[in-house]
Image (cartoon, rainbow, N blue to C red; front, side):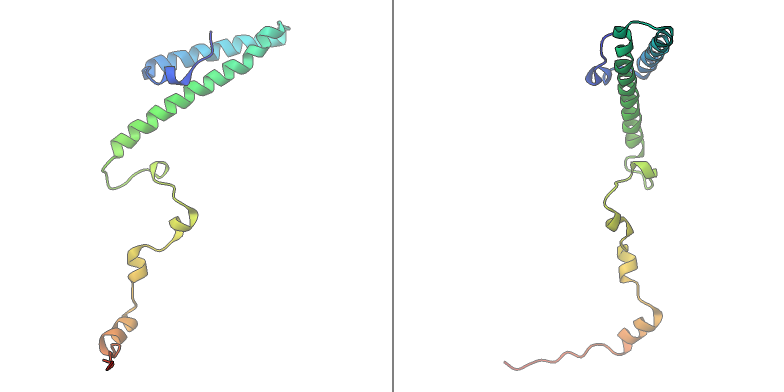
Amino acid sequence: MAKVKAYELQSRSKQDLTKQLEELKEELLKLRVQKVAGGSSSKLTRINSVRKSIARVLTVMNQKQRANLREFYKGKKYQPLDLRAKKTRALRRALTKDEKNAVTVREHKKQVHFQNKRYVLKA
């Protein structure tokens, strides 16, 4: 099998991708058996490329699955944690608008009954 290209995999269906994944895994199994049996070095170097090809197929499958999930949850109120925007750690831990504007009962009474005095200065 030739080296698998990721951009070629994008257009394939899920069934084709799973089929190719199975073929690659079978090939890897055969190559590992040949390695133990003492196969030629040209076949042993092929193990690395097959492993990388398997990784490419799995990556494309995961990308497609995540894209479908993003489409499914688009416009919904709640999203799974792994689909939410990551932002930064500081932003994730910052107070929300409601939490920032929250005032205790005592503070609220103080604001209502003892408002700040405003003075008009003559220029």
